[in-house]
Image 1 (cartoon, rainbow, N blue to C red):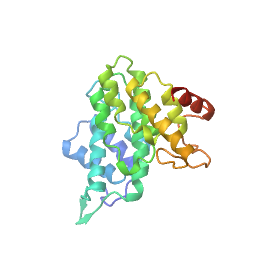
Image 2: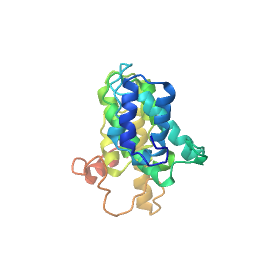
Image 3: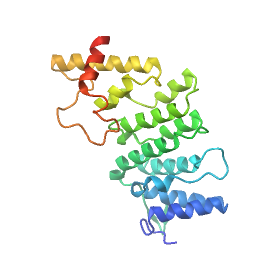
Image 4: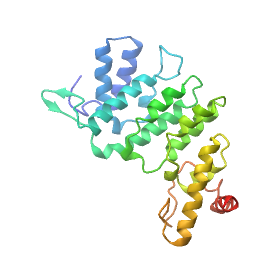
Length: 243
């Protein structure tokens, strides 16, 4: 297999990795493929990470994806090489960070429905989210909401642990309105969200806009929670009642 970066597509590398896992090839072979996928993770799509699990109770091989993400972060954040071919060192390009963050959010949302996915495993993956990609938390909120819905019998402690992976101040208006009415969230986090909303409204009325202020531009169509379900007027009424 050619060793130059991008000589082989990440989708093709993913197919090889899935086959290597199924055929139980050497650990060195699998780790090599994982490192090469990490080098091109910004070009990957969700299907490339949906690796079937052949040795655990979960539907997908979460451990393999976790190692791929760790390889990616090592190269991107610490500027370490993830592959060495003929003394040429490669690292993850900065422009891919945002794309990788969105990819991991989609992956978390996909595996969140697995009832055998433990809280610890979900959190360990969420913690690998590149910080530079977290300009909004809508994708993370969606994944967390799906996980809580698929695991209705979690203890309050575990639900708080899962929700601690999210920064409520970075939610869009639509996501905040959805979260404020979401009975799957711990009461403590809903109260925290309502506090931020009240503070944001006070700042907007004062003209400071220091907390969670938003520009009057058209809402981002990529938001995962539609404003048709939770219009702005409902959000304001809900906050004002608490206030």
